[in-house]
Length: 284
Image 1: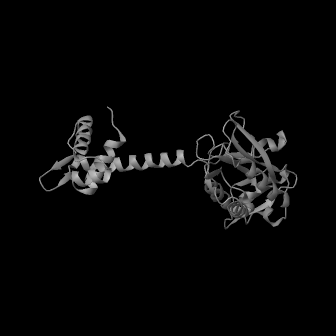
Image 2: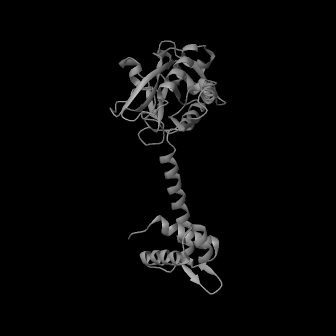
């Protein structure tokens, strides 16, 4: 079955305008062309979409359902066209759990001031590439190396590792903790995007682990006191939660914050983002 967007636009125009004559004017075609286009759509679908009288045109029951679908298809098609033709006037930066922590608002403001012609959008995508592989963003903030050779990346800063625990946990009374203090707890990990694995501990003192898949679920489980988590300090900045406290893990390696992009199709703003983020982290 062959169906064209112009046919759907014609159908929607006829229903919105109420007559073939007015629809033809709205579409910039002749009335005969509008009639032929609608007839070709009905033949392609094998159903009658409109009731025609000498005074009005109204959709059939099937026509109402088709019009509803047509509106959605046309909206998606228009969005696709805008996306493809927007050039580089929009810069989408993806992230999985936390964007840039406490640097996020400063980055947004400074980018807007320095690059008013390039609109910045932050997009949360809980995937290993923070939306890069899915086409949801142009650049991605990730906190572990990307092994996929389609992507390149640069380290823009370092963040401390923090332990997230219930506020009434005995460890919460300390200013900081060590890895050994956590080995008797159950650790929540996110294998797709997380930066914590049992390999941070020596083989004979690794904590028990459970998997989680979302930051809200992670925080909810930790707040009950039955689990703990380890994360980058940016998470603490963006996800304050009653009943959960964060403490530095003083003998754990810091986490490298990377900006990643498509190796063969980098956004023109990539270097500018790298320079701004590097400066922000350097001043931290």
